[in-house]
Structures are given as C-alpha cells and as structure tokens.
Image 1 (cartoon, helix red, strand yellow):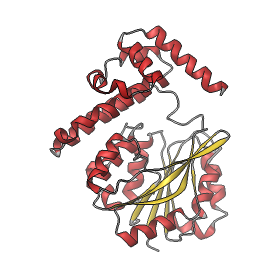
Image 2: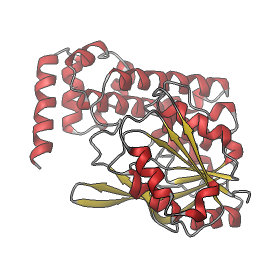
Image 3: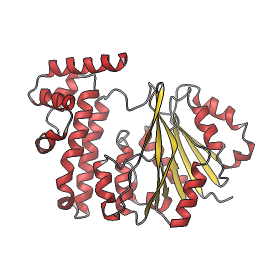
Length: 326
C-alpha cells in the first residue's frame, strides 16, 4: 500500500501519554496511513509501551516505522529525519503527549483532495488540568493576508499539529528546521509553508487534543535554550524575508510578535541571570508596540528595561504562586 498520509511522531519522555496517543492514531478511520515514530533516546519506558500497544493493531503493523537514536538529538533533528523517509502525499505531525480524534485524518485528507489544497487547517482542543477549551485557528478569506496573519501568530496559529500539509512543500530546503532549533521550530516551518503554499483551506472543526498538563513538556520553564532559539528564529526569519525581497513589506508588523516573544520569555523563565543577559533583545521593537500589552506584561517589560531584575524576579515568583493556587 502506498500511503496517502504520513503521521510523524517524535518520542521522548512520554510514558504517561504515549499509549493514548498511539491508540488515537492506530484507530483512525482512514486506512492509507504511514506511521513514523522517532525514538529520540527516551530514557523511560515510552517505547516499550508503544511496542506493546502495536501488538494490538496487527492491521497497522506493515505501515509502522520506528527510527532509533542512540543519543538525544532534539525535536528539530527528529522531525527532519522523519520527513526524509516519509512517503505520504500529505504530512501530519503529532506530538507524542497529545492525541487526535479518530476521524481527523480522513476528514482533512478528503478536504485536501476536494480543494487541491497545499495546507488544510483545523481547530484545536486545549486540555488543561480540570478543563478544556477550543482554540480556533483563523484563516482569512483574503489569501493575500495569510502570510501576514501567520507572522503575527495571533488568530492564525503556527502549530504544525493541527494541519495537513502537502509533502512537496516540506521537501523545499527553506521548510526544514535547522538542527538545534527545538523551540519555535513549528513557527519556523509554518511561516515558510504559508509563504510557499498556493491553496490553504480551513475545516471549522476541532480534532487535535493539545495537552498542557505534561510537566516534562519543553515549553514549561524557559531556559537558555529557549532564549537562544527565539533570537535564532527571528534572525533567520528576517534573513528569509530579505532573501525574498519581502522585508520592507512586512517590517511594520514584526515589532509586535518579536516583543511578544521577549515578554513571554521574561515572564516564564525562573532565571534572573537570563533576564539580565537578554534584557536588550528587541528593545527597539518594544518601543513601537508597548501600549498594546496587558498590565502584567507592561510591568515585566518596564522592570527589565530599567534593569530592576530583583523586582522582576519577585513579580515572576508572584505569578508562579498565583498560578499554583488558582
């Protein structure tokens, strides 16, 4: 069977989640799927649980590939490696601590074929401890606005996992993730996919369950890696725009998302040292959009700007305590 869709799943420290994830994949109503799991040297029993579950789905066994890493390489390397061997007409990424509705692939693939789409988007179900919420991934009716919307990453989201993408787009060198970019890697890829895609369509239905209560997820506390990756991402994105003679066209909207990246790092990191070291990133952009931020964000930006790092740490600690008591 030649697969019509390849589902790519990096696996690392997801012992509590991998069985639910894999079961949601193997139970898909769509048959012509290739499953590629990348064991990124996970130190727990995630792979043992996955392999045990695979035995319950013998009908899927011929369409499952497992790539093994002897050392942890990170999500960027894992995604690129899986893409190299994927053979489906369309690609879907699923994080191994998340899960999807059983009809997700069938519904999205049908939409792709009906519209000859390069990218099919759906909404998402965000799962928090004790409650869930639907996040709508906005797609403008004006296709000329799609790229600008994804740059802003406000109503149009840069998640890979709620999208079905034509594999040909991923084969472009521009649309691969630089090794080491393990944070903002989705944003790096999706901005370029949107730029090169000719047809993008939307299904107004939520299929993907995005889990926020995994304490081991990479997006929790912001470390040096997060700061370095954010700076790298925006440098690469500016270069990308310049290479395609688009920088001047979009320069006016770049200040807001760059400053949003900064304030998120400053609020989330536990490290006062990192706040001090990266206090001046996007300082010029910050001046143009400061008024658009919420009170707490403005306070953190102000404390960092005036190098009041002790107070910034106290504010961070207060936010952590408040979130734990809600």
